[in-house]
Length: 202
Ligand SMILES: [Mg+2]
Image (tube, rainbow, N blue to C red):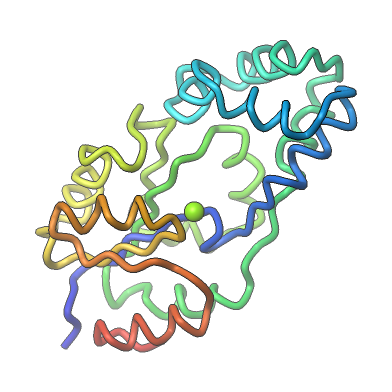
C-alpha cells in the first residue's frame, strides 16, 4: 500500500536537465555580451515574471528578450538559442513511467511557453501524465502556495497524501509547509530509493 495517492514532479533538472550556463553563453555570444549580463537580464523583472507567468505570448517573448539583450536574430534562430540548454534525463524516465496508472502523476513547473514548445515533442511521456501544471498557464509560480494547491486540487488529494519532487530545496520546503511529502530530487538512484520509501518502488 503506497503512502501517497499522487506524485507531483518538477520538470527542470528532474525530467530534463537545463544547463543555464550553456544558455547564457549561447545568447551572450550571439549578442556580444557577457554571459553574466545575459543571466541578469533574463532573470530580472518584469521579464522573468512575463515569461514564467505567461504575461508574454510567443511573439512577445521573442521581442522582449531580444530587446533586453539587444539581440538581433530571426525568430526561428532565437527559438533554437532559447532552448539550446536542454537534455532529457533518460535514466529517470522508466521510473516515472512505472508510476503511471499506479497513482496520478502531475507536473508542477515554473516554465514558459517556448520551452514547453521545445520539450513536449522530445518528452512524449509528459502527454501520459494525469495533469500538467505549467506556471505560464496558471499565472502562478513555485514557491507560491496557490500553485501547489492547484496541483492538489487537480489530483483530488489532500496534501498529506501527495509526494512532491523538486531539485530546488526552497520549493520542496514550500511544499512541506503545506503538509505535502516533499523530497529534494538529486539523481535517478536516489529517486528510486525515495519512491521505494513511499511504497512505490519503480
Ligand atoms: Mg527544477
